[in-house]
Amino acid sequence: MRRSVSFAGVLAGIFAFASTTLNASGAGGGSTASSDTPADRLAYLIGTWNCSIKLTPAGSPAVVNHGVWTFTKSQSDTIHAHWAAPGYEADDYYGYDAKTKTYWLAGVDTQGVLGSQTSKDDVTFTGSFVAGGVSSPDRDIVTRPTPSRFNDLSEVETKGAWSKAADMECIKT
Image 1: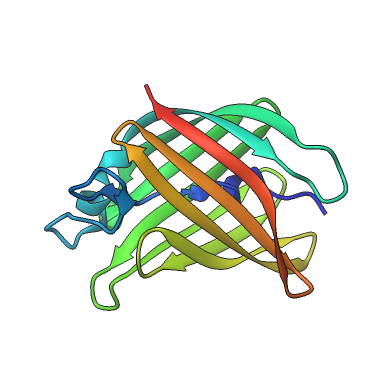
Image 2: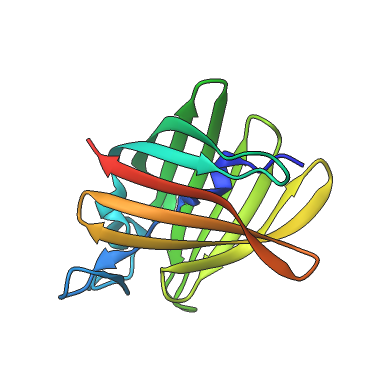
């Protein structure tokens, strides 16, 4: 089964995901935003990011792909992300539920892969994706070493063991 690029970042972010803000020490960590609207908490994502993603398909050698991730404000205080790479596209939505203090994301790609994840700490996102009618657990660990760069380590669970699916670095343009 081929792993979707859209959920290798939060997606992947990423989606992605990619909702980590810098703490006072400059390392990735919990949000320091004072607002509870997703648009405010995730505003640093808005813009264009050039990404390099090292995919590690099961049983195959790793390959490196490049793409552009564009984030824009969307309706209902959410963030829309569009991923574009040669032969591949994906769209994701990111949000924050103030009542449950949970970050969420959901998306689909041009290969028909659907996925969603949630996070309480805006660093580790867990959920699942469906590809070819088969659902698989996945998680993304997002770090933000500088305001203009984030990294996303994406893992998938198979038979109770986690393995790396992708490692992505994005730089804001």
